[in-house]
Image 1: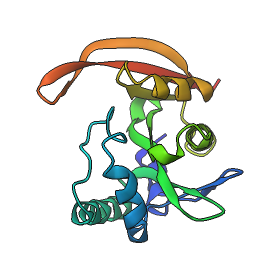
Image 2: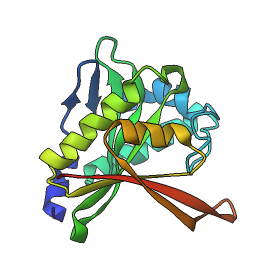
Image 3: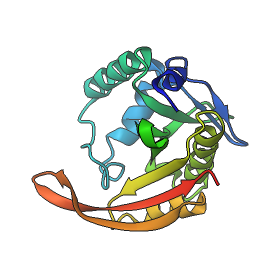
Image 4: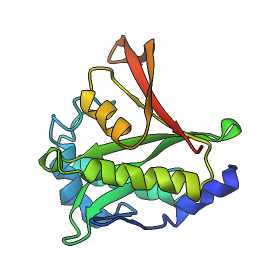
Length: 185
């Protein structure tokens, strides 16, 4: 995989599953994004705080649009095909180009937890990573206490690899990070 391969994200190809459409995040997703991003439960195990108001979410969506244009944002909006409602995001947080690897991330509106949408979206993004981007390895990082994230990763075929002690400085203290991964073979 090369920098040229990442240009595909400038035009964000839509991905479909049985129940979901994964597509570019749009300004019109404002209320759906705010609905889950303002909920403290959503960001409980993430590296961002809840959105305080619609203006903050609107500014976030402008940043996302700018990053799409320059090809540096790799998240898909997760939408329900039947209704078009955006219920979260799933995509790549970063790429390790020399090692042909990508870090996957996923966020879902708590109102849609335990319905299989998270694993359905994640499995589709993993397939996209291997088939279209030709990645060798896809991995997820999460706080060890986030059992739901580990379960989702394992449901999508990832193997728990372990925990890195003090791997990230977050809110003034070093936190452990757990890793799960899958390789193309």
